[in-house]
Length: 142
Image (cartoon, rainbow, N blue to C red; front, side, top):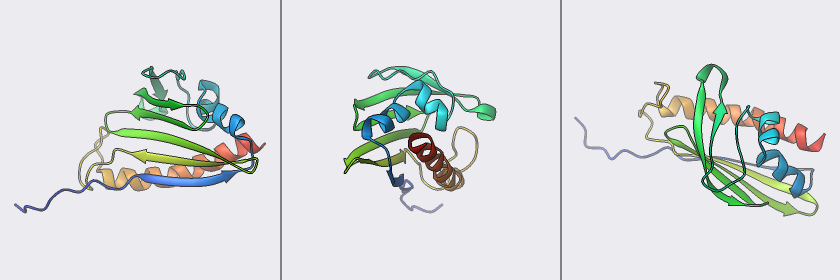
């Protein structure tokens, strides 16, 4: 048995500049309708401590809880048993810099609640967020 210290995997962090005002982007990432338009159906309400569900299709319903709410700059919530999602917004000359942070990763071999190692799910999710960020851009810039 090796005595190596386990190291959590780094957060997924993706930033993009959206050609839309911060209020429009905030509505897209911090309302139930907005989140459903680019991410997934949900029962979200923008209230600190609010418990809601993300309807993750074949993966079932994921319990979530709003942990930080600072309109129109920052929203964080827990997702499932391991993860946290944070949306950070900053106004940049009439556009919005949007940063998505997906944290809560265990070490590479820790299993997620779905039975796959974190390293595999993290890679899958990192790629998935690229597509979702493109959907968000199309939604707010359209």
